Length: 124
Image (cartoon, rainbow, N blue to C red; front, side, top):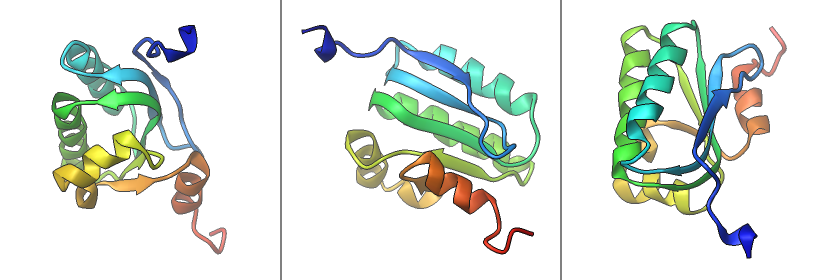
């Protein structure tokens, strides 16, 4: 039955094709928002160029978590930096769709899809 327990919330570095980023694990709700916000702010501040947020291992996200992602998007946008969000199809992706915010993010179903988007098709 331990497989049914949610994963503990974690944020760790997860660059992709030399683009800096973070991977998030567990549930994103109002209880972890301060930690998530601090981790994203630090990672964005200490990096340059396109940025990756990997939500592949996120089990749940509420509106407060979505607000933190929108804030990160705004911080990156002020510096004309791209944001790629890895978010497989499922409940987490549904929040983006139901809230109408999916159009504001470059969402990718997998790390492979995001990596392909980060590198020009002609290899230049």
